[in-house]
Figure (cartoon, rainbow, N blue to C red):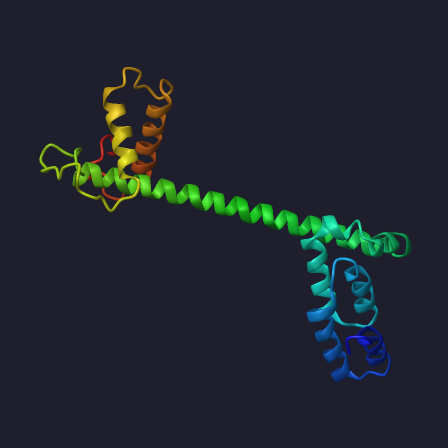
Length: 202
């Protein structure tokens, strides 16, 4: 099998011996595929109607395109089968586009999570108070207490800056601008503006 797997794959296809084709495909997937022969195996897999082997070869080419595109098999394939090269390049572009879109979605999700944590921390500070900052009618817990809100420390610094900044207008200071945006976002989403303790909510 190690020596004749490719030959047997062709014969299994010609004589429609499906069980032999499965064994040959499995052997080639596990023990034979390499960057220098994957293009040849891909072309053979397509001719022999072995879709699983064809898919594995395509994924291998996309995963190590830089190395495989310099191989002798790729150069021969470019001359003999330019339509296959075009198909592989289009598939590569599609995979790369999907990867970029996935990364963009992850980044957007990260931003939404940060905004959610910031708003939660803002409500927590204005309603309950935390460590060294809070409403006048709440007893503060001191700086040694560990807060369960991950964004609390950052929001505390932002609130302190906002209360003391001399340029506290929407387009005056970068930190104040963030605070204005956070207050506006909270006010748009708050479901209890009449009783909310966050400044300017109503």
